[in-house]
Each structure stands twice: as C-alpha cells, then as structure tokens.
Length: 560
Image (cartoon, rainbow, N blue to C red; front, side):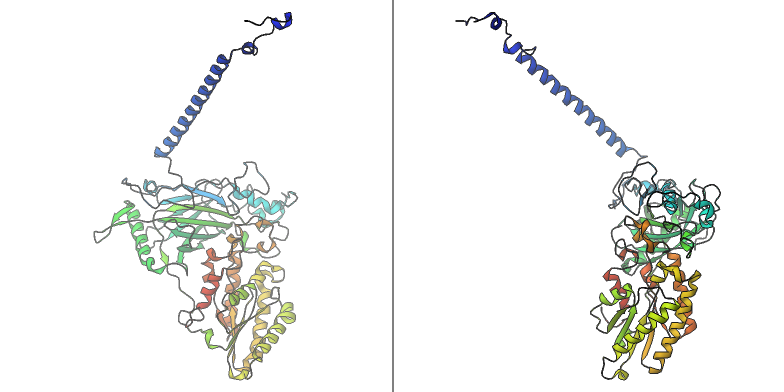
C-alpha cells in the first residue's frame, strides 16, 4: 500500500532520482562518455608524439642525438663516403644548468644540448673543415661583460673606452674582434708530408680573423671515451694571423701500445681525404680491410685577444681577468698525428735516490709532491713563505728559512760530511697569481731569484756535498678552475694564464743556464699534458697519481 503524504509540502517534494536534474542512469551514462572522450584525446596525443619521434629518427637531415657522455661506437651498415661539417655542442665550463634567454650580467651558461654526431653521416660530404661550434657563440660577449660588471651589478661601460686593452675588443671601434667560433681544417696544407691540423679563428659574424692572441687547451679522446684520460693533448701554436697550428702529444697516461696504430690510421685518413675518397671503411696497401675509428676533440677556450698575456697592473680595475671559460666538443673521423710523450730525464742522469736526504723548500704543490710519495724515505719538506719571490721577501723570508732548514736537516745526522744532500727549491705559482710585486715581465722576481741562487751557491758550495735543484713548478690549468661556479670572483685567477706560466718558466730556465751549477727538475710540460689529473675546480693542485708519476722520472731506478 502506498504511503499517503502527511502534508501538501511533502506531496510536492521531488524524488531522489530527479532531485539533481537527471536520473542515476543518465548521470552514469554522461560520466562514461566523458571518460571515453578523455581516453580518445590522450591516445591521439600519444600517436602524434610517436610520429614526430619516428620522423626525427628516420630523417636523413637529423642525426641521432646521444648524450655527450656516451657515444655509439658501432657504425651504420650503409656505404657512405666523404666528410661533412660536424654538428657540435657547446656548453659552459661552469655548469650544465639551463639558463634563461634573457641577458644577465652574470650569465655564464647556455642551454645544455646533447652532443650530436653520427659516425656514418659524418662522412656524407667531401668537406675537410669542421665548424666549432656550429654557430658563433654569442655567450662569449656575456662573459667578457663580467670585466666591467661588478657584484652589485654596477656596470661601467666607459671602461671599454678608457682602458686601452678593453678598447681593442670594443665591438664597434676595436682592432681585435673577439673569437666566437673556430674552423678546424683537417688538410690545411697541400703538401702530403705535412699532416697537421689547423684552427682558424672566426669573429662573431663568422668571418676569419687575421690577428691571434687566443689561449686554448685542446684534448683528443679516441673512440669518444671522454670520461677517461685523453689520448692526446695539443699545443696550440699561435701563428699570429688568426690561425693556430695544433701539435698533439700523448700523455704520460696514454697506453703506448696503440700509438703506432693510431698514427698509421691518421696518415691513411689524411691521404684518402686528400684524394677525395675517404670512407669509414677502407683497404690498406696490403689489401686488408680496416675500419677508421674517430674520436672527440674538446676545445677549452680561456682567453681571446691577448687578454691572458697582460701583466699587473693592466687588470687592476677589472672584476675578472677577462677569461672566457667556454668548452666545445666535436667529432672527428680519424685521429690526428701524435708525438709520443718524451719523459723528462730519459737518460737517467738525475737520480735523487743517491742522496741521503732531499730537502724540499717550496709551496703546496711541492708539499703534495713529498706527501703523496711518503714511501720515499729521503724526502724532507718545509713550506716556503706564502709570498711571491721579491728582493724584500727573499732577504727577509726565503734565504734565512732555507739556511735554517738545511742546517737543521743535515745536523740531525751524526756525520753530515759523510753524506750527500740535495736542496730542491722553487717559486712560480705565487709569482703569477699574486703579481703585484713581480714587476712587468717578472723583472723584480728574476732579479731576486738570481741573487738568491748566487747566495745559496756561496753558502753550500764550499761544503761539497750539497747539490742545488730548481723545481720548475706545475702548469696552471685555468680551464680546470673554470669548471666550478664563481670562478669570475676568484682573485688568484685574474692574472693566471698558460702564456704567463710558460713565459715565467722559460725565463727561469734561461736564468739557471746563466747562473750555472743549478740543475732543473722539469715538471712543466708533463703537468701541462695532464690537466685531466688536476683536482676538480683547482687550477694549481694535482691528484696523487700524477705526483707519484712525475717523481718516478727522477727516481729512475726505484718503483714508486
């Protein structure tokens, strides 16, 4: 029996199924239709994305993109010939974070892009030149702007008009346009006997430059193994006309058993490319088939337009030292010609093992040299004053401490006259990074060094059992410091450059020959080739394995 409404209001109340405007079945039907429409839209979006990716992978004009930390070693099965311009990647030495496109006074990064290359498509044309990077790098000017942009973002554009060194790189009136791109020439000479590579510097409009002054650190990693120690490192020889001749040398850590094979592959690649039929696969003179293996060239650009050669006080008012700190990678189809690393003291004339004690007086690099070789028991170290070598510091700090340390170390023995001793001294790093008192062209430093060496010879020469050695110092790897954030505000980097360190090294060697009876312990060229073995973010200090390696050259009969 139906229940009767108890009141007129109750009789007019709508039912539960129609209270919200639809029945339960209608609401469920609408909900199902909305779900179906959502699934259809999502499926359509995924299909479009799949087709785009498929188009990119199958397109002949779009090389397969891979991470710069992993490069495919297998080649395509398709027969291809020639060489084409290689796509490259460019990234800041500072970080791989993506930056905004807005100009910023502290902008030091670019969007991180994957290294694009395909070994088979690399040989699709007959060009023997490669652009590095593929387009002019506009971020170089942003890093140059840091010279006159200070921490409080105060900009002093008039510095480019009043400072003669900055006036040279002015974009409108300057005589030296900054380098924004390089052209790597695999066959710069028509002479078949000259198989070397040449870098042509280009300005921000892609035009060849006719003036030099760039500082570069260039590495070659065979078979794209960029995380390992480089196969070879190049000396970039400035020709003075905007070009740089590359002389590649293997490093102390290169496996020598592959060097002859790599050199023959480089010669064959140059020959076939010059004849116009280079292929990733070829046939040797004996009829055997071989396969070319290329690698990665990494270019670290530190300075342009001789900004790295300036002495104090040229950069006194600058915020930075004018460093660029840019890094570029590119694939090359075959290895360059390499010279095998020649270890110092190859004739074994110097043997520090013959001394009862080797007294080391030097900076933190020499301290690490002794500390990382603790198994060598005849090493005794004391740190030199934290100061550049000048006439004042030499008389007040250097000479008194050296004489005190030597006398103390020798008189620990009962009969010092019955033993032989070596005194190892050196000063290079502090004289470069703190150049206020070194003078132009290091004239004050060299004057103090000459006087100090003569005094040491006068003091220890009559003893007859003390030999004096000069530690050449380590190469200052500026690009390593550029791998850390905030490099532009680090004062020691302001006057640091490869040019200044090698310039001081050369002048010291000439002075040693002039003074006489002081033996050189050469570490400069060895450490230059081993930038990969420096502590990350530290341009001055090396890893323990490098310190052990360089000391073995002067302990030729000892396994360290």
